[in-house]
Length: 169
Ligand SMILES: [Zn+2]
Image 1 (cartoon, rainbow, N blue to C red):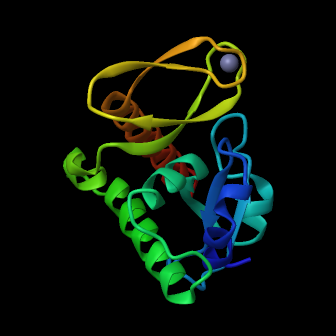
Image 2 (image 1 turned 45 degrees about the vertical axis):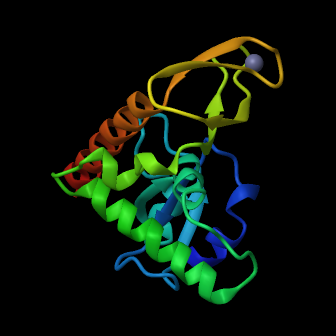
């Protein structure tokens, strides 16, 4: 599979999965979607395919929902790939102003969150910054979700995973 093919059907993958892409990152690069190892490392099938850590599926979905999409158009897919690559590279850099990842003027923004109670993923619409409550669509439990805190945590997790990847060499 290529990164572009993954982007085309991104919403069919589980939000808990991770995208692995072969370097150098580009739309036609060899890519695979898989479940990270228990220790967060790159799974064997991704290593066998020559792919390294790229981005979590739920983060990629969040990024792509920030840009208008004409589905099924090749040009749109290439643009989506470019946006994801830009975001993944930005995550890998040291200077990370949050405003560049998720510009505030884009509120309200759709997002996928995971229920603490039943573990199901569900869609929410983030209307403003700061913590807010969202009822789980499966069990009805209120989930407190702070979009910016979430993004910060995701960035920290990504950094940790990248350090691990580098340490493995
Ligand atoms: Zn629930």
